[in-house]
Length: 235
Image (cartoon, rainbow, N blue to C red; front, side, top):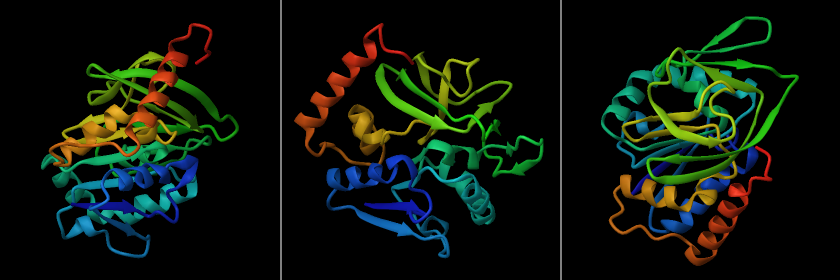
């Protein structure tokens, strides 16, 4: 099993790098390839079982778009072929149509999904999210300078029960198409959502996925769920 982590020297904010640290403990026999910015992505010429990219600064977003643009059609091909992707925090914006700055200028993105992001660098949004993916509860945190907008979020990932979705006016969060999973949630996401981690391992081809430290992580998950269900908790 081969897992590619894109640009870990840049895409590592908000403890997002711990997503792969935890997955590595769940899959100790898997090969983890950490592709630096100056190297060609492995997915460009080989099959991989998961592509991961995490949170980055706004300047790095523009660098990453420039880096990945030559591989746009390959990324689209891999999505259609059900290659699993996990894209967290503002890394998701790289796959949208554009990112709009406060002055109205736009940074053209990969244009794979029909949404765009608007930055507001003077106001960071922080909040909790409780939602569900199918019948699976999803928990997480948001910390971001941008919100995403679309006429219709056709490929939404998480249905919001409490908290803010892609923007305050919608009750959906993230992008899900084939086995592409993109979300603004940080935390790290896989540690906070062990049921989804098992799901991800299944779509990667693991027949009987087992979580590292399962009793402890499930106890923490259930405790956090109880906290997020408390009506006194502010989202």
